[in-house]
Image (tube, rainbow, N blue to C red):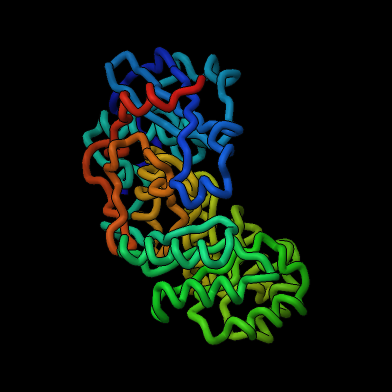
Length: 345
């Protein structure tokens, strides 16, 4: 394992450029979210060093880091704790240090367990017939799992349409964003969904309600998965007997600590490090997935749901998996033509 603190090379950050890009979703999602890409553009950065090495990073939708830039100028990327830095700077620093040491980013993060990582397809809440059509698309792309933004009034119909389109071996991750609201309704829906291949319920009710999660688990056969981002909350869920598996998000430090707690309890996880991102964040998330031993469930790494990932399609999912880049840094390059096309700020 490469230490988190690396000081053999001395360099300084000399300049940081920021870009805001508005990249539409693929048509099926754009139908339901037609303006999200313009309402909340995605932030990209380039971090320049005096050694001529440039790192790239991606922030979230609607992020702004201009007020932070002055704090980074003059810093040495080789003297920073890369693990605790937040995106988009964490992405760019791993890209820089990896290039400087001629190592792919995952070798700076920890022991490698996987040379490819699992990913799932994803749909926003949409009409059940449209969801079924998306499942057909997903199967043709080789996916075996479909995460679904679910609502209580038609989740059973959604599962039926997905199964008709993709077959009984195609699993469904049901993510209501706590809209199932109560233990009673969650249990009722779980029993109605038993004929289908449901991987898990993610946050059926408010995620802080571990007693409610435990009550649901005691009455259903479907695994329950809280979406958490701190080791304390993961430990609390385990102690409360409130989870079968976890969706883990956050920066690298949070992910490593949270997943280690889950692993100690023998529980699998999936990672939501990128989510509805472009390709830079997807590349970083793929490197993170490579070093998490129990990240065996399909990750929420969803750059393929944008009409352009801005990395030239360098991380295509095949059979529900993405190969971990082996070239130095993040292992992807920013497509300058695409950047110019979609830039809005």
